[in-house]
Image 1 (cartoon, rainbow, N blue to C red):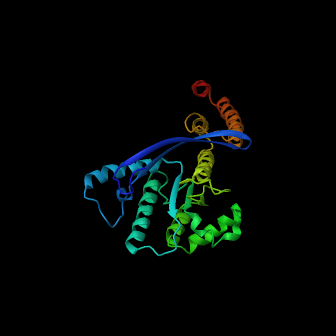
Image 2 (cartoon, rainbow, N blue to C red; image 1 turned 135 degrees about the vertical axis):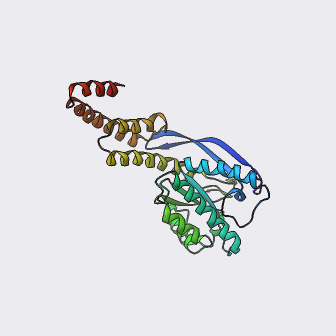
Image 3 (cartoon, rainbow, N blue to C red; image 1 turned 45 degrees about the horizontal axis):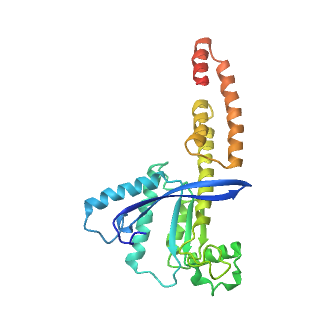
Length: 275
């Protein structure tokens, strides 16, 4: 991995094999690692202003097209220096503003955000009664966030993103360690899978929202749903089944609408319908 202060952008490609809804799934992940100094809003500047501007654009372009965001927060108990706290908050604000510009400009993020509390091992004595229970552990994780140095950042994230989930991660013992020998540096499988799953749900909801707003734009409605298969590669069995039913219904409505048009318009519309 690059040094934390390296002024470079590293792109990683990998896949996760899992089983969801009794179906084997493979999620293909593309992500980027970058230095925080490249983000806008920091109180400390790096000397290569032109380089930062070019690299920053690449990062923000990537965020604007991302289907999900994973935010790593280290589990700490001590207060952060004011400058460091402001840097984190300003960076988050700049990312929110950039993504909203590419959507509806509402200053919200309609994609899933996974908040990963790394090094949750540090809390193991404090919350020993969790007994590795996922729901109880998540409850404690939320309590920690609300009373931690990250509380303001957490509040901002939940205010602008309706789809947020917190993952306490045992950085040195794996996601859910059972024995001492299961030592791994980071274990992000669970949040990655959650993001991939809910990214498909968000894409589907976006297509349904267009259908609700423009119910007579049959051609574009069908194109949007088709794009979920051909471009976005949505594979969730429940979503695929629902899309098939919607397309069948919309196609019939589209055809019936065409049949009620005057003869000349009908011929042109039928040609477009067949295509």
